[in-house]
Length: 247
Image (tube, rainbow, N blue to C red; front, side, top):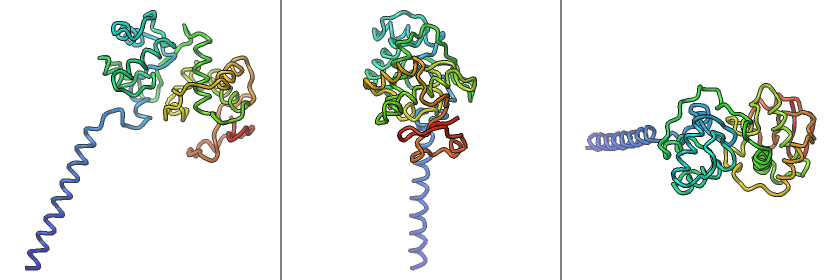
């Protein structure tokens, strides 16, 4: 009797284990692409964002214009008007409202972009992106990354972004640098989409006007929260607020 009871218990446990495994396997294969790692999301497929140019942007603009979300020119330049139209479309259609046309937003629009080569960010250009657009985008990045830092620290973050624009190892536009995959926490966690305060906008203008409190730094990090081991190999040039700056 005891042996039979043990066998029944073993069989019950085995069946429960099989059921749990089946549910987990089903879930793994049914997960949407958007739930993959941020690296795979940004590197494995083409993503359109503020500053991107080309035919794919025109396709997005045509769609948004036909649906009355966008009333600007269909010029293939992803500027402020296109960004705002994308956000309106995302909000109306229950999508993540980030102003970025990734896989989910493209599919909702009925678009299928060509896959970008792994390890390469979508090409960007400064053509058609005016200074006002750059000021606001830079201000949003500063607000997301340095909110709560002293004013000079805000300018310093903006200066690092601009130093990267001029550096051959980084994209050559403000938008390209900011949206480079995994470059900034504020992009990854959505804080880039918060409305910037007056100080952040002023800091963006000061940085664009040439003020660089970092003296050419192209990296910054908070030593209390940094998780990358590689960042500690950078040479520290100065410290402002909670951030360390380096090259």
